[in-house]
Amino acid sequence: MRTKICGITNINDALDAIAAGVDALGFVFYEKSARYIKPLEAKKIVDALPPFVQTVGLFVNEDFKTINNICFESKMQLAQIIDDNNYTDFSKLAYKYIKVVRAKSKEDIINNENSYVLIDAFVESFGGSGKRVALEWFENVDCSTFILAGGLSEENLKELKPYNFYGVDVSSAVEIKKGKKDRQKMFNFVKVANEL
Picture 1 (cartoon, one colour):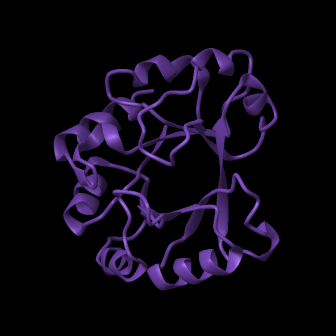
Picture 2 (tube, helix red, strand yellow):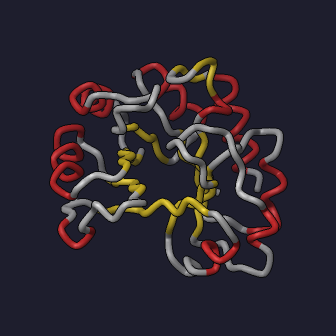
Picture 3 (tube, helix red, strand yellow):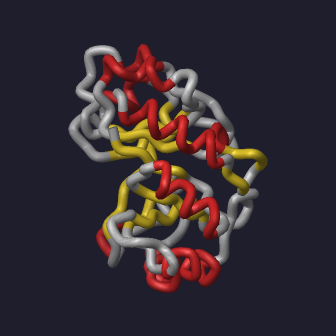
């Protein structure tokens, strides 16, 4: 199972995550987040990364110009976009993207079946709340294109095994505090994910 660690704010955490075996690193370009990073600071980290690690920029209700500019400045390879208010004209994005579905019901899951989307639990705020999506919503659904986020930890990852998710995304469960990762927790999380 593919893994992404989100909310990277410094090079040490990025290199520790890579050593743990992650497939992707997430950088938060939402200014109200405690994990927010300026594009040029993210670029410094990206410039120091080894090859074969995907860089992902997280955006919340942004227009396509802002997303394109920040991805260019920071050297992001993929944009992960929350677009609750329909700000983003996806046809004008210059970068590959994945939409975030903030699920409120099973219908939100069913409506996105066979699409590569990241599914998170709906909360009023954005990102890193630790709230989980109800797993029963995924019963009898093909989850092979879904990346699951929200409330995941090394302790509960094994519950996902029957669903065959494409990947998982974690932030708060592998942190010492918001914006600072815990090396051992990252290693433990990725190890469990790789066994699924």
